[in-house]
Image (cartoon, rainbow, N blue to C red; front, top):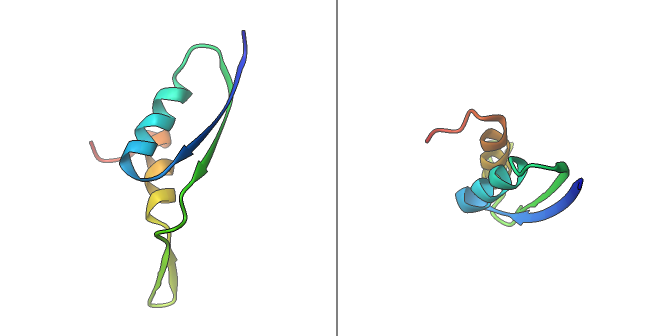
Amino acid sequence: MALKLVALAGGVGGAKLAHGLARLEGTEELTVVVNTGDDFVHLGLKICPDLDTVTYTLAGVANP
């Protein structure tokens, strides 16, 4: 059975949850809604720590 999942995530714990859900057998589509409440602007650049953490974790390039 093909699974279509939606997860709410933020920080390292949410990134690990998303990673685990993505690895479930039968997962056809995964949508992750990531926390943006901690975003900030530094020297004119928008910093999105939770979005970065989830993206790097799902890509397999996050530090262990």
